[in-house]
Structure formats: C-alpha cells, structure tokens
Length: 290
Image (cartoon, rainbow, N blue to C red):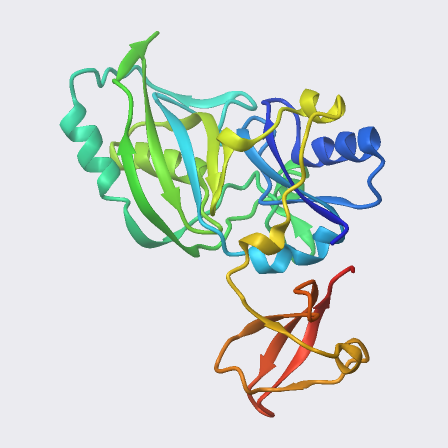
C-alpha cells in the first residue's frame, strides 16, 4: 500500500502535532497523523502514520503501552508534570524506604477508574480538557476504566533539594495516564507529587529501539513499516477480485473472524472486510491501495 508507519523517537519540548507537521513538510507526504499523543514534555516512541496508512488507525486503537516514568515526591503542578508553576510543595526524604515505595507502586496494579489530568486532550462537549483549563473553567474530569498491567521500580530513590525521585517501568492499557499515576501515588503517601519525566518505550509490538530521530527523518534516513504486517487478521486469496472491488459482500465461509484481509490471487491485500453477524457476510471496512 502507499504510505506506512514511521517510528519516531520524539524529543521533549515538541508537541506530537508539531512533529507531524515537520515530517509532512520535510518529506512532502500528503497525509500525516499519529497514534497515541505524547505530551509536549514527554519523550519516546511516537508512531506516525503516513498517507494511506492513516486509514488504518482504528485497527491499532487498543494497543497497550510501556513507559519509563520518573515520579517526583514533594511537589505538584496543575498539569501534573514540569509544565507550569508549582502549586503545592513539601520537604520529603524517601531515601532508604524502598519497601514502602515498592508496596505503594504495586497497589496500583490492576483495573481501576482513573481520573485523567485536567491538562489533557480528552474532549468534553466538544472541548478539550486543556482548553477548559486555559479558560479557567472549573471542571472535574470523570473517571475512566483503565488498567495498570504491571509496574516496577527500576532506579534507586534519590533525594535532591528536599524532594525524592525514582523511576518505574509501567505497562498500561489504552487510555491510561501515567501523570495521573504520579499524582495518585503521592496522594497515597499524603505528599504532593508529579511526573518529572515520561519516556514511552513501547506501543504494542513497536519499540523505541527501532525508532528514528526527527533529524534522521528530515535528512531522509528512515524506512516506513507496512502496518498490515502487524495486523493479526486472517488473509484470504481470491481468484477474482472484481466483485470485492465493486463492493459485493463476501459470504462467510471462513469461520468467525471479526476481520479478514482479502487479497488477490498473488497475495496482494485489496481490502479489510468486517463480519456482519446478522447476515453472516463480510462487508468492506477499508479499501487498500494497490
């Protein structure tokens, strides 16, 4: 297909949308988007979708993620990260309290209702939460069902200028905010807290170790990934694709697969079709570029 996924290692201080714009401008792609927005102060893996591959975003919507999260105990900002002024502070020293820190961290593992940060892109009545915050509109976000699949501390606990820091590795579901984890962690210890560093290292099967820097991409040193290779959908070859291309539904003789990638007789993907259980047939969900 025309286009693909581009794995980029995003730096701090640049927004995900700004990175998209720079990629589009530098390489003259017609369409550019991304999977899973990273906050401007977060770094790490951003999956950029290019041209026709932007149509496949919905099939990758539920990917879990892995973050390196540094939690700072003793300070809090409204954004729950280093952006903005500190609104609450306290002198703390958790050095030598590894058992307490580890026990507290493990208490968050599992499914939960999480209150997202007010400074986030979640929409409420057509407005993004960060837009409400900037307009000084008082609003408390509703809890969302998410899961912390696993978490472990991967650094020593250090106290610097009366605040304590440690880094943990967090494996999360879709929709999970590690900034909220940083906030809730401090709340459990009755101290203000924030996320002082966020580094996303994995999204589904995609790893930051295989990502390019923005400079690499702007200099033409990059390779696109075919996202179809990462869809675990059954593939079916058709001797004649005329009916499929004309929008005819394919009678189901393939089993109970939610999606099927229909290909021509040479194995070239033509369309992703979805099973309609009411009529037991597959209708085209996404046409793919030949």
